[in-house]
Amino acid sequence: METDLSYIALIMEASLVVQIVMVVLLLASLASWVVIFEKRKTVRQARAATDEFERSFWSGGDLNELFQRVSANKRAMPGMAAIFEGGFTEFKRLNEDLDLEPGPVIEGTRRAMRVAQMREMDRLEQNLAFLATVGSTSPYVGLFGTVFGIMNAFRGLANVQQATLAMVAPGIAEALIATAMGLFAAIPAVIAYNRYADHVDRIESRFDSFIEEFSTIVQRHARARRRKERA
Image (cartoon, rainbow, N blue to C red; front, side):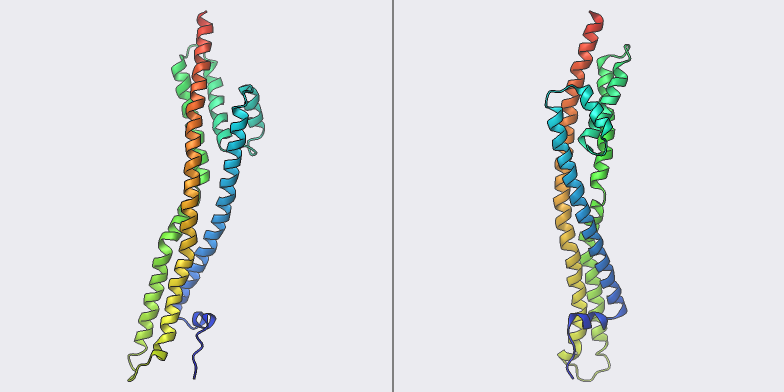
């Protein structure tokens, strides 16, 4: 009799442990693809919003008008706009205190922007750890299924006087499917993690640069106010 070695037949006839491993890997792969498409959308929106805000910020317009537009459209301009809003809000509050020197005003503004930056980075980095976990563990999960399947295949030959390749081939083939599924789940997750982690790092660098540049602007405004008071 010929043995059915189709993929469906091998999966359906695999041992329970190997089938559980395959199901886990399939679910991990599906979940990672959901995260990949979601992260792709999030990163693209963040980059577009950052570009749009930088054009508005460096266009030479009034910062108070830009602050009002950002405050009225928080959802439309996340990322750098949220950092600017947090910093400018704190700057206006501290700058109204006539007893404060420029140094505390600048430090308070910088801290507010850093807090807003951490919130934005937490949003951008969400689920990246899941991709890293799938990418690093899936091959080992698949390897576990492979080892268990091959072990069962050879255990089945214990009471056989004459072993042939045809007798052990189905067990080895079903076990190797678990390894293939582990790689199928891991490779896209690793590629996506590296790609989006790089994009997030680049966005974070732009945030850091903006905080330094805006701090310089705040410093000039605070010192100009102090000079007017002294005059």
